[in-house]
Length: 240
Image (cartoon, rainbow, N blue to C red; front, side, top):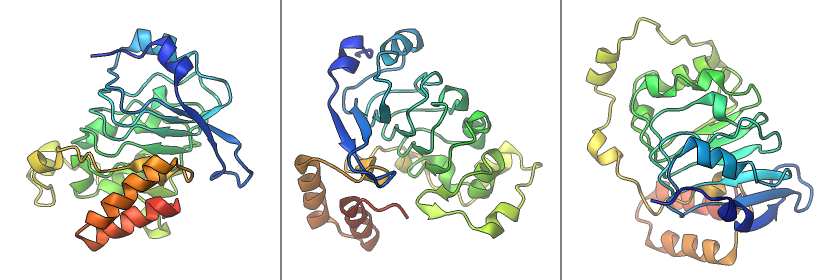
């Protein structure tokens, strides 16, 4: 499987978006998605060091990463898209220093312990999406995320309410109890990575015509109201 090379970084497609600060085309987006890139800390660190300093959004969706890419030295990146990989544990120390938005949808995060590293994430992090991971279906999931990252404002497209912040996650919850919980959805089905999920729209408004047409085709084939609303939200560039 391919490791991320310096040439891949230097030759990666680039475009600008204006979704974040309201100013026209100011956030540079680097696209490293759909490349089957695997995790290799040393080589990846060297390659990612060649990212342009003005990179604001890094899209590494749909690769074969099993760990968070080492981006802790990058000051400018505020949005990191890591959906549809095979990430099994979260290391908040590897996040960019000024990260605000994080997508980890459709990975292999199964238990609360897999998320423990979020407590080391920069305090700038305020928007996380973890949908499609087994851990999302555990009882007390949202409270646990807020325990690790109390500054979070949006979790899985839903605004964090004041009553959620005041709710306490019981420290005495045992891993065995979590596994036996009836709220846990069958893992076999949930681990299947849905290739139709297009998460770039969760934080990036602007998209090329090919991507827009692809989402329109998916919209025409959608069979549930939730799926229709999600796809329409992507086309509109909405974050809710």
